[in-house]
Amino acid sequence: MKIARLETFTDEFVCFVRLTTDSGAVGWGQTSTYNADITATIFHRQVAPWALGADALAVAPLLQRIWEREHKYPGSYRCRAMAGLDTAMWDLRGKLEGKAVVELLGGKPGRLRAYASSMKRDITPRQEADRLVRLRDELGFDAFKWRIAAECGRDVDEWPGRTEEIIPLVARTLGDGIDKLVDANSGFSPRRAIEVGRILEAEGVGHYEEPCPYWVLEQSKEVADALSIDVTGGEQDWDLSTWERMIAMRAVDIAQPDVMYMGGMVRTLEVASMAAAAGLPCTPHSANLSLVTMCTMHLLGAIPNAGKYLELSIEGPDYYPWQQELFLGDPYAVDGGHVTIPSAPGWGVEINPRWIERATYQRSELAA
Image 1: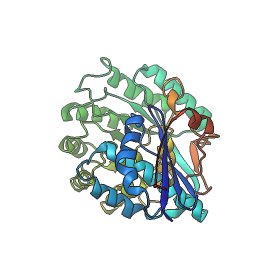
Image 2: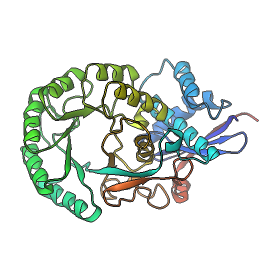
Image 3: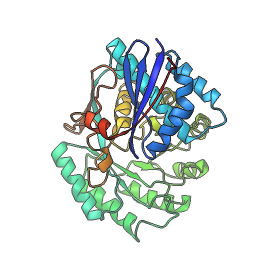
Image 4: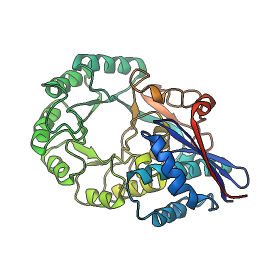
C-alpha cells in the first residue's frame, strides 16, 4: 500500500493533512501549529516528494529517509512539517486495523487526569485565582498551572511584583489537595529563578517549568540542583542530540516534549524512551486544543513513564479564537478533572468539515 496523495488544509495557525493511499484508504494528521501556512509550504516542498510512492505503513523508516534526504535543512520547521505526515500515517494504520492509536502503541483507551493550563499573563493574580477556583468547582480539576515571570523576560516581570503576588495568592486560594504548577517561559536568570523557586517550595508548588532560557541547559541544571521541587522543560526542543544531553546531565526532572514540535509520535516516543531509561517521567507539552492534545492523550495512555497528568488548555475564544470548532463534537470534554482517550480507530476525532471548507488547499500526488 503506497502513499498516493497528500493534501493540506491550512490557515495561519493550523494545518491539517489528509493522506490517501493507492487503495483509497485515508488518514488524517496535523503539522505543528502557528505559522502553519509556512509549515504547509515546507510540507509540500520537502516532505511530500519523498513520501509519495512510499509504504504507507512504514512510519519510522519513511521519517528517517526524509530526515536523511533533507539533511541540509535540520531545524524546527522541518520537524513541524514532518509531524503532519507522521500523525496521518498513525491515523491511517489505526483505521485499517480498527484500533485506536493508543492500542497500536501498546496501551488502552480510558480516562486520563488533566491539569488545567492557563496561558494568560494579561490577567491580575486575583482574576486568575478566581477563574481557576471556578474550574476546580465546576469541572473537578485537581491540578492547575499558571504563568509567572515574563516570556524570555530577562528577570523583568510582566509587571512589577506580579510573580511574588500571584504565586501565594493562587496557591492558597486553590487550597490543599491540589497539584500546583507554574510556567516561567524562560523568564529568569538562575539567581532569580532560584529565588522564586524558594517561594514556590514554601507555597507547595511542585512543578517549575522553563525557569531559565531553555537553550542554555546549564542554567536549568543549576536551578534543578538547587531546588527540591521538579524543574521541567523541553517543550521547544526538537533535536534528539539535545535531548540526549539534557537527560544525561539531568538538566530537568521531568521531560516535556511536544509531539508536533518533535516531528510526530515516532520521535516523541524516542524521547520518552530516553527519559524512561534515566528514570524521568514524561509529561508532554500540549498547550492548545488542536490535534496535538489528542496525540498526547494517546501517547500518555501507552508509555510506561507517563507523568501524572495531561496538559489541557483552558483558554476559550476570547484568547485562542483559532482553536475553536476544529473538530466535530468536543473531544476534550472534562468530567471530574479527567478527559477520555477515544476508543474509535485512529485518533478518534473528526475534523470539522466547515473548517475544512474555509481553509487554504494544497495537494501533492503521484503522477498519473
